[in-house]
Length: 197
Image 1 (cartoon, rainbow, N blue to C red):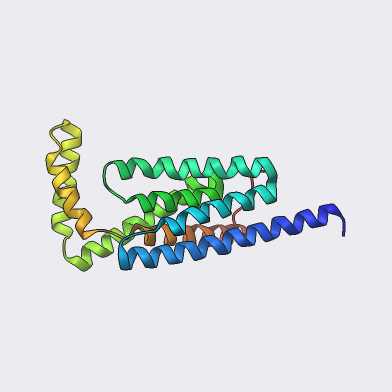
Image 2 (tube, rainbow, N blue to C red):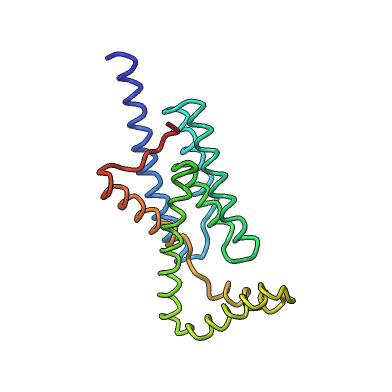
């Protein structure tokens, strides 16, 4: 066995750890989010560290940069939604883990799948809770307030009420990631590339 063969083995093992680990983290996070409405740091922080280490083992410094860029994309896309109270900090950290695994470009694409699944989940929950009419009236009020730049106290009150009702966004994140991987598998016959090059 020469050095190149060993390098390929480490890369393959790193990718298996990344995929298997991410799917386990997403599944556990989704279950915890549904049951407890929380995604603990004990799940997200070690997961991000493991993802970074796997990328370092498989691609060296380029892997480190790739992983940090993915974290930045996942974090900054979701931190804006956290700032206005649409999601919790655990969701932001979970999306950072997704970014650490998939890197910057794939994370942007995964986000589209997560948005679709978030919409599907939101519609299901609104139907299940019987609040479609109330939610649509809130949506129009938010659009009106945004367009006219009026006082947003109504939005804050409605937002706190929505937070009580809640939506386990980890379910949509997990479903979006699974859907993305399945889509890539169907269209290319392989898993998404998890490397900088």
